[in-house]
Image (cartoon, rainbow over all chains, first blue to last red; front, side):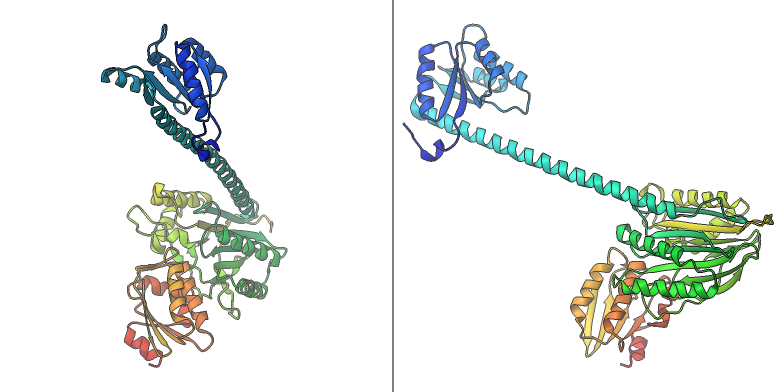
Length: 407
Length: 111
């Protein structure tokens, strides 16, 4: 009775048999049981549909011509009820039939035919093919299930990373200068990361002796490693809070050695300085960074500075602050290379000269509007292509009506 | 993207990429590391074809310099103006010798 051991190690196929001939049903049930199937029988289409409602079958074997609803109509109903993703292998039994009718049955959703009178080999072939189909279907179903689970896990991991990045970006943003609480010192800035978080940072920190420590750092690279490094620089500068030129030099030298000691190949360019708003006196260190612009009433020009190495390259590098004077009404403008390398649709960079033109065009506006205009011009320039590099720009001005004594 | 010729302890590196940036930098560095492997003390970097270099590219050159160690020497030949400006901005022009041609770079390296 058992035709193949390996075949019978599989679970039995659940088969629904539909025929108005009870002798045929009995015969087929017996044959199918020898082929590792369990069969349930229906004498007409209505009974079959009821059984299908309450049971799960792998396969239906239905007669074609039956009183009431015929086999083709039954198959059409089953396919309509089940929808596309539900699998059911359907075989139609018939004593004959022209090709037109057989095509009609195929269109209705019949997978295979068994011709009466049935012989054993025909039945074995049909059942082997059905079994393969069912097996493939269940394998696919299992695989889809695993894929869906894996996809859900990936999506959850992505959501968590995204949430972490959002939190890190918000944290970094909170370090950026307050726009309106620096007494006579007016400040405006723009800060836009190319990716979620930025390797740029901007700081303006009021010190006890009345000076303000200002800085703009740009860590090489983008993304999380650069952002962590720029966070570190920001934090250390706030912590060291140098308030004299000598302390400033020492603080930058220390920071340089710290970054170099990390052995990470990370480095940063930095502009950092002290500004005393009451006197307009300032000191500035330019470590491998683009020189800031000084904006007078009638002129915009890059500051002429003796530069120093970027931070993190050479542990014994010197960082000597250069003195400068910022008269009331003049502006000091620091920016990252994301600004000067901002490309238009043709891939042409803004360059320092382009930034100078933008600044000159906006110089009669109050400092916050001037920065807004530069920011808008940069947005227009890079367009929908997005940023390749982080953009940051910090503008400082000592108010002309500053005699309020705040420091 | 690089052609490296070894001549005793002198390595001549011709950078054939037009951009030495975040996209090309890491491969360039791996290439140099694999090929030099401690065999060169003096490096001549022919950068005539490089029209753009960013902070990552610059970082690679600094790690190349560090790879050569204390007695190492590095000369750059034919840097285009934008690349030269970057060297000057970061003061690397005080560490590397910037020359206009491969021949003068060879001379600077005492070859």
